[in-house]
Image (cartoon, rainbow over all chains, first blue to last red; front, side, top):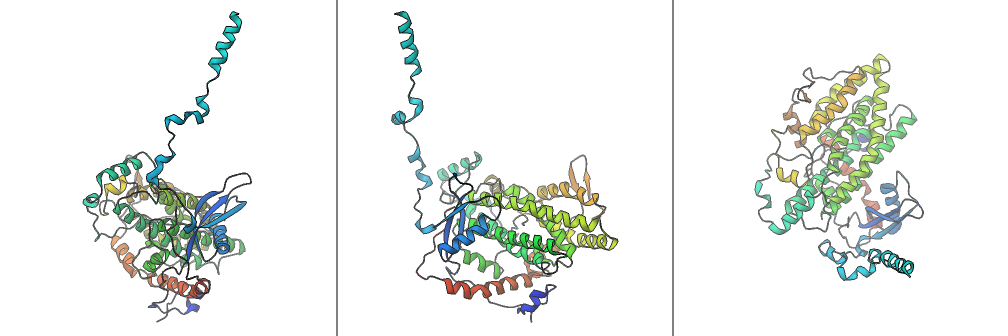
Length: 125
Length: 330
């Protein structure tokens, strides 16, 4: 028996109420692309999520609809998820600065004491 | 649009859900959440955390997709082009929300195809409220205002949860929902301040939708399975009754303000407790509908199946068998 609906479009579609159609096969919805959005010129591209697409061109179209439908955007990048090589959260300590590298930090350079001492000595002379 | 995640009462979450977990990793995980940090897809997480999140985000995604169907019914018959354009934009938003949420759920390792299949075979649930028909234009107005309002209450709470990808998706979704709410309110106000026929139409819709709206937030706390663990893990962010109360507090005065009534004589705010009191909606009806016996369950799933089937030739034409699926990163 076909579905009887208050929606005329559903009636026109003549859908069997016990239809078994529509089961998706693995990978039928394609691979995923990661989406990066640039909100304005001069800003970084920022990761906003992923889309399923059969190609990079289609991924851009879907990304535009899903992530840039509202609000500002001047540029989009898409990258195959499979092509992203990422670090593990478990290894987050590799980003910690260890104490013997303070010479790379601006705070490690304190010249004002030396300058003041120098000026004192000049005055004394 | 989404209510609180429905937990099947037969499926008891036992307190031993953490029994088989590595205690050191579990402690680290819990302290991260307690500190307000987000959990990311590649982090270690308890099996039950992952399972409940997949179930919840997936239900939410399905609700967005199926929720577009009762509203979509009125696109072809919307009164006037402006309302037609606005309704089309709203329905497109809902589908977009579904896509964002499926992507978030996928980061936990369940494929898009598996989620679609679980929806159309009836294995996964979606918000019960979408198993009712939108009989008149006023129904679509009531849905856009009050169902979306209920969804925002839930979604704002969930956006403070612990799982990064879900929170990020919800932040985007909440921003768009505010247009839906305004649009719905505008439609209801137009009818409620219109001719006697228009007023009667919106009152009629409100009477019909009140029980599903009360159901929307899920069974009362004393009946629903409550897991302190899921609250501690910030998977569930508020009790069903708290969410319902918050909604009543925000919207009942606005409804009454329009001179409209609600079909519950006992509905009032207890000024001492600050809580709303009401007649419990019929929870037996809720269980019947969620288990497939609502007025539109069959239609919703059959329409969804047909849409999937009708799109298959396009996907087939574009398929590249050499490609491999990789779980999205974030």
